[in-house]
Image 1 (cartoon, rainbow, N blue to C red):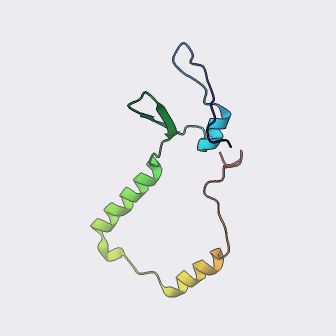
Image 2 (image 1 turned 180 degrees about the horizontal axis):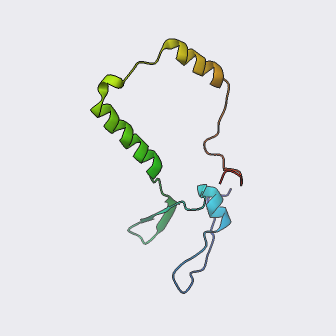
Image 3 (image 1 turned 90 degrees about the horizontal axis):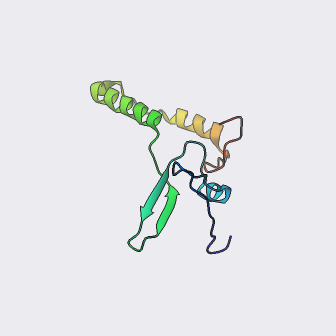
Length: 106
């Protein structure tokens, strides 16, 4: 990709626009992703993918934190044999967390 690529889109009467495919691909945007705008002093606007929190994950982590606070006696250390078992099952498995989901996974 060249150092600078210029792309245009058109605003509708309701001030909406379609994010061009090249921009979506570059920012790795998917449906319902949020955009972040940075407005610079010289009038330039930089568009980036927003780094939002996952509300489901946030709720789950909040549940765990509350449960640990209320019942610290329930915490247990992970047994070394369990760690070895997990490593034997997942060793050599490579996952690209940035790879797009297939149509079946969306």
